[in-house]
Figure 1 (cartoon, rainbow over the protein chains, first blue to last red):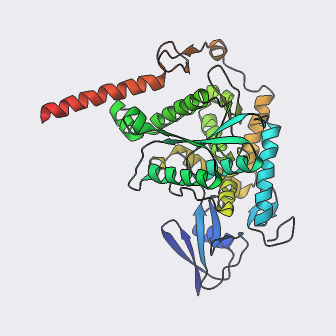
Figure 2: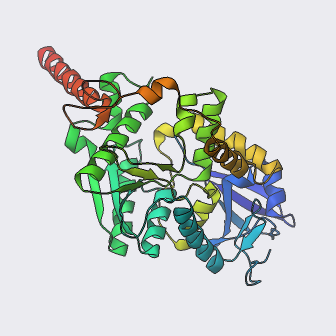
Figure 3: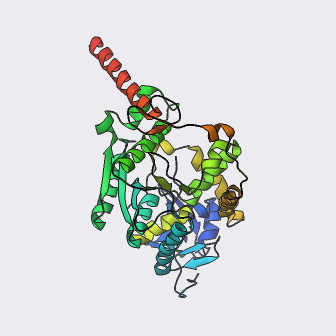
Amino acid sequence: MSAKLILREKTYEVPHGITIKQALKQLEIPLEEVIPTREGELITEDTHLKDGDVIRLVAVISGG
Amino acid sequence: MRCRKCGQKAVINMRHHKLALCKEHYLEWFVAQTERFIKKYHMFGRDDKILVAVSGGKDSLALWDVLWRLGYQADGLYIDLGIDGGFGYSHQSRALTEAFAAERGLTLHVVDVPGLYGATIPEMARLTQRGKGKPCSVCGLVKRHEMNRIARDLGYQVLATGHNLDDEAAVLFGNTLTWAAGYLIRQGPVLPASPGLARKVKPLFRFYERETAAYALLRGIRYIYDECPFSRGAKSIYYKQLLNKLEADRPGAKLQFYLGFLKAKQEGLFAPQPQEVAAQMHTCPVCGQPTTAPGKCAFCRLIERVEENRQTRNTDAAQAA
């Protein structure tokens, strides 16, 4: 009973029912540094995770 | 979360603006805001010929897309640095940039650095032993020179880059940590034209990095997602992460930091150093670009050393064989 968050090559499992913002906080991933997407659509951080959800996090920081 | 304009489902929430928008209204807002900043900061007009420096990344392609939609005369410049990094970084970013231009019928100028100067950027760094194992300083020098060269040779009045607010705040943060007064006085969204150099502008400088990425994604722009292999561990990324920690607790902190700096500069808080006021620019006898010291400019000296060291290596290799 969980949802998956994928950031680059890493996959994280989190309990469903919580929001993306809460999941990111648990995983210590700053919201400012990612854009959450589900099935190719951008979603906001207040979205509740459903069982079996796969959320791809698009990394936004670039530099050098 | 709902779109403030239409009540439909929002796709992005900008906490620092207390603004959530749906896809349609976000794209509309982003383009309109860019136009507003271009005018507010007197960046350029409809009659100016603009050269957009494009890397194949989200920011520069988003910028080019917006300028094209707004009807500006904006052509692209891609500089092929010959960086591979095990995944064909330059090859991929060039292909994405060329596809972007072709899909929109835009003019793209390509500078092939290895083809033109006989060495890739990492090879130049190795041959000249510049940059402590990283080619970033060589890369910056070559890119600046080539951007200026193409703008001058092809008659562009304005050179536009895709720097976003996070880029600018990170540079400001670094310069403030070291109190680099010379750099602080020059930092800003518009660098006026000077003899031999086009005006430099950063029309996306008020957007958070997250916002330019959202624009590119929502517009369906295909950009290079992988970072330059040499950017790993870069100070600028570390500064961005630090600033994002601040932003998490205080939405708007990054924007306030940078805009506060611009306001302070406008009010005369940063005075030019006496040596800078008196600095006289010279012209490089080889390439004709302005340089701070008499004689050849840093770029022409670099290319000369690349050539010399390559010949020495070739001779050594031939003798060893």
